[in-house]
Structures are given as C-alpha cells and as structure tokens.
Length: 436
Image (cartoon, one colour):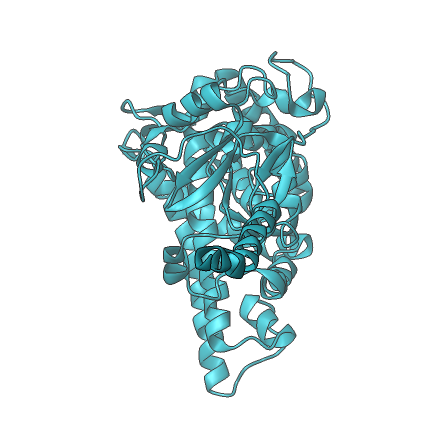
C-alpha cells in the first residue's frame, strides 16, 4: 500500500515532465537539410575545400560534391556547420536579402588584419554608412573628372618601364600598376593628415579623406580602417584580373585583333583632334574591351565565394537553412555552369554580345550591344555590391588600351592560374614583350 501511495504521489510530476518533453520536441522544428557530409570532427571538410585547383574550374572537391549532392549541399567548413550554394537562384537570394535573412560573416582573422571597422566585416547601419562614403568618392562623376587621369598616368608609368624582348612577371607588373596608384593615394592621404594636424586643412580639397572629414563623424580609427579596407579590397583583385587578361588573350588571337582595331580607332580619333589623354567618351567607346573584361572576370573568378550567416531559419526550394549556420554562395560555380554559360571553360568575349550573355559561343564579325547576364556576379550583389567595381573596370580598360596599342606579348613559360582559394600564378606568369 505505501508503494501505491508513492506512485500516486509522484504521478503528477512524472506526467508533467513527460508532457514538457513532448511539447519541447514538438516545438523543435525538424529541418529538411540539403544532402551532404559533415566530414571529420572539428575540421569537417575544410582541408579538401581549400585544396588548390585550376582557377578556370570549380575544383575536384566542389565538382564531386555537386555531382553527388546537387548544387545545394551541407558541409562543415571553417569550423562551422555550412550550407554551400552553387545555385544561381539561391546565390542571388542570399545577396539580395543581406541584413534581413543573411548577414556577412567572415572569419575573425580578416577583422584582425583589416581592422574591426573594415567594410568587409562590418554589418548593419555602420556598413551602410561606410559604403555611402565610398560610393560618393568613387562616383561616375569622380571617375570622369579625377580618377581616369590618374589611372592612365600611372598605367603609362608602369608600361614605360618594360624593356623589349625581356622576360618578366606579368602578375608582378600588374600589381605594380595598381601599387603606383595606391602609393599616390596614400601620399595624398599623408599630406592631408599632416595639414589637418598643423591646422592647415582646406575643407574644399576633394579626396577620400576630405570627403570623410566633411561628410561624416567617423573616428580616426574608423577612417583609417575604411581607407585600408578600400586599398586592400582593390589591390589584389584588380591586379590579378589584369594578369588574368594577359594570360587569357594570347589563347584567343581574334580577340587581340578586335581589341587592337577598337583601340587604334580611338587613338586615330584622338590624334586628329590633337588630344593626348583618354577622356570619358573614349572609355565609353571601348565596347569590345568591356566584353573582354567581363569574360576575364567570369572565367578567372578572382572572388570565388562569399561568407554569409543565416539570421533566421530560411527555406529555399524545399531545403531548410537553420538560423546561425554559415552560408557560402560560390560565385565561381555559377560562372562555370554549362547550363548558364555555353562552353564555360572557353575564353569567349563575344558571348557578352549575344542573348544577354548566357549561351553565345560563336565568334561574330559584327558587334552587337553589350549585355550582361543576371547570373554574372563578379563583384557580388545586393546591398554589399563592391563599391569599387566601376573603378576596377576602368583600370582594366585603360591598361588593356595601352597594352594592345604598344606591345605584343607571349607567355615565356608554362604557367596557369590556381585557386588557393585566392587566385594566383605559381610562377608569376612570365611573359616576353615586343613593342609594336
């Protein structure tokens, strides 16, 4: 009898506990995760994901996972549970919903290198404010009136140092071109800072530092981190893109010929008018050059993937992306998808003159209006679209203009672009040049 009394005494507590666990289990949503593998404990599949591979491919790891699991799969990368996307629609969805469903989430080491106020790692209102400052400084008006002149001057400075029939690293020369521009900017910044300390600051001076001082209340640390992030973001990406163009073009003589025709026409018109420096009108005439730039960025994929994090549970195409999981939109996988770009591993600038830049594979003789693909995202997209994208294309176009007008070049050694995952040439892309 006492045992029966004990049972009845504890029965309400036992039933309450059972009911509690049932409610918790019901409340906990059962996720329909994409297929995939979480790999080894702690390290997951990071080592395989970061294994070097040819830059004009997605790599063996990615290709195997796409073949096995599809364009959306789960993994464990960089120490976090991750959804990897090689799906064009999901990538656009992720980038367009920045700040609402997803958030930038780079490894902490990036913030340690560039500073905690770097645009690359900032999110929310602070990122928006920094981006507005950058966009104002890199506006089309400023590109036309200030930056085009400086870009051309420093491009000519680098090319004038090339000695005929010598072998040198095209990658180093491309970096040198960008570095001379950055050194000019840094020198101007130092002059402005010195004037500021001496009380001789002219608020009307029109550079990035002046713009920040005039239109924002950023601290000194924030200003320095902003400038550093802009210099860092632009230096490697643009110089590598120029090196990739130098690498791809010799394999497509028809493209070099059409480039020369386009730029000789610009040069003849300038000679007749008595002008020396390139103008914005000259730049807008470089239509086929823009096709070459787009194809270089598509095939070379300087920025291969982005780091994001889900801010809330998201469902896409029947799959769940749990809140807090890392999300990697892989831009390169979309650019090299044969369903979106015909013969994706062929360097074909003419594809950008047809069918919105998707399926063209022929080499037309007549130019058509330059178009772009909705699946083409070399500078990211959404609220975090690269603020320096137009400057990067301007720098590439000016470099190509003077390169094809004044030089012929051949690859002096077997070399190719590899993704480490950053794109690099192991041998520095040695070339031999001859003046035309």
